[in-house]
Image (cartoon, rainbow, N blue to C red; front, side):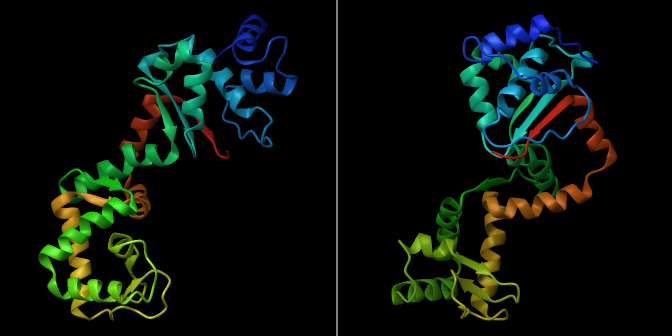
Amino acid sequence: MLQISDAEIRAIEELLLPEGCQFPEDARKVIRCWESKDVAACPGSGKTTVLLAKLKSLADRMPLDNGSGICVLSHTNVAVNEIKEKMSDYAGKLMSYPNYVGTIQSFIDKFVTLPYLKRKFGKAVQPVDNRTYAEHIYRIIIRKYPRLKGLVINDYNNGSTPFADVIDYVGAIYIRSDGSLCVGNRTRALAGSSRPSTQQFMSAQQDMLADEGLIKYSDAFYYAEEAVKELTTEYTDLFSSRFQYVFIDEYQ
């Protein structure tokens, strides 16, 4: 287990805290703790700074045993930005292989979802934002699916539901739980589950995946759950061997 001396904590305080400030005793206990713990702290209490203190102590000891690294995850890029801003001299070391610093979503995409999708569909798959996805699927609809094209253009031009443009409209189309083709927050479906337009939209979604390798970020969550259920012990053991320490900042 790592031993953090008082002198080392003083050096970390000089790096991370305003001049003359010190970590309170409860923060020092967290900095010195290297067991699995759930640390609760209110917003603004300095938990990210304490995390940076632990990362500084690890950076001074790299490379770690057996070439392993550390993994730092948060809901946003706060950890990444803080490392770059406050620990610029250590950022390169902390953010290079075998370490990983990023959001929970980016970690799941990189290590779980995208490798799973590549195995499942035999090609690389890339999650994209709704606008980009809508632009691509609209081109497919125009090129390949005349009945669906007519429905989309006619309904959009009808203007019964306000959208910025036809791409925004297409981005709001989805398959409801009963299989119907719907758009936005309308209760009335565009087409029933058995209608050709609905089947064509589903085919266009498959074309997006098969031909262009694109899915929406929201779809990535579904595939992530599917992938996690299929993870083997061998795969999870790889995570354990690569990352000796894992830090998760659950709230921002």
